[in-house]
Every structure is written in C-alpha cells, then in structure tokens.
Length: 299
Image (tube, rainbow, N blue to C red):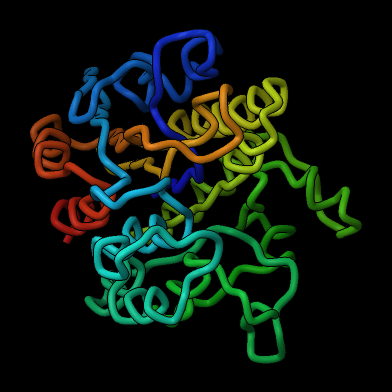
C-alpha cells in the first residue's frame, strides 16, 4: 500500500504536473494513462492495472486535511464526518482513538497476518518507539498494531526505505544514511513486500512540494516517486502481489495554489486478476473505502 500525501487528480491542463510531466511508472500504475482530467468516479483500465477517482472531502466544508484524511485512508472510517471537520497535520485525540481501534495494519495483525510499515525512523526511544508527542497517523497506526518500527540500521541492511525514497533529504539534515537510487530503494521494498502480507509505505514529499508552489520541486518529487514505482513494479510478480496507491487529499496536481484542493484522489490497483481489481474499484467511492477494499480482497 503506497500512501502518497497530497496527490490529487486535477485538470488536464498546464497547471497540473501529472498532465504535462512524463511519469511512465505512475501511468502504468494508473491503468496506462495519466489520471489528469478523470472525473469523480471515473475509471481508467489496462491489462495490469485499474484506477478510480475517489472523493477525499466527505462533503465536509473546507479543504481536506492530512490528519483526518489519513485517518480515513488507514482506518476505513469516514473521519471528517465523525469529528465534524477536516483536521490538519497531526491527529487529535478523537482521531488517535479511531486509529487505535481500527486501522489496516492492526486489521491484518489481529487476523494472524504479517504486516509492516516500510519507512525507516531516524530516532526511537529506549522502548523502540518514535520520539516526540506529535505523532503522525501512520506512526499511531503502527503502534496500535504492535508492529516493530524500522530504523536507520534497517535501512543500512536493506530492509527499510526512507520517506524521501533516496535518503538525500535525510542525509542533508546530518544523518549518516546511505543515498540510494529509486531503483535500489525499490529493490529493498520488494524484499520486504515478499516477506509480509501487507506492507505500508508513506511518501509525503509530494505534499511538501505542492505547498511550495514551485513547479521544479513538484516535478522532482513526482519524478522520484515515478522511478521508485516503475522499478518496484518491475521487481514484483503481478500474479502474486497487489500494489495499491492512494492519497489523503489533493495538492501537487494544481500549481495555481499552494493549498490543498478538493479534487478527487487516485485509488490505483496493479496486479491480481482483472475481476478482483474491478470489484475493488466498483465498491470504492471515497478514501475510507480504500482499506476496506484491500481487506476484502486479501483477507
């Protein structure tokens, strides 16, 4: 499960990097076409993949935000409706409660399956938990599932991937980490995927780039993700693995604003039988349906 922060679908015009950029890996995952211009509920298909444009707003006024959107995407609960608003940044107590009770990692673990969070953490405390009081939704979900966090040692051993995929951003912050190509990171990811029933990866550089409003930064963030996805699909067997990609809200797909958008976001599925992919997309209209579709397909 690839969670890509701030990736909407957007219009088919010059303001959308997904439209004017060349991203063959993302196109392959998205049914062989650029998803730009796909209307809400619209579907794109190829022999190996399927994508549907799903809602991230839940009809709640205002712009979708990270904490409530990610809670919905990970838990299957319509979090913005439950708490009555869109919640930005880090989850509130109410959202943490939802994630502690229900999230896709916990769902798999509770049923005896192997689930893991692929991201490497830079610092953990003596109990193996991330430092700080402001914990991300993926961190809260991992803790609730009782899953071990991956570390920089895991990264060096080739069993983790950093949030920026290559490690360049993290190394620039002074951490002793190897800098890898997206292809090398994809091979590490493929090894972890082979050893688990569910592997979750979070990439939030897209949201950071979108907030910058800088076209070059947006192209770099999408290009890095695209190369990772392309190499990952090459390293995996579509008969044995489902790769899904979705997001919490739009952002990077509209260069006319530095804010989030109300655009639909992708729910892309690669691998598996065509009838399985069709069943998954036909049952999913918003991001809360994404983990439910995965659970129904696999368990």
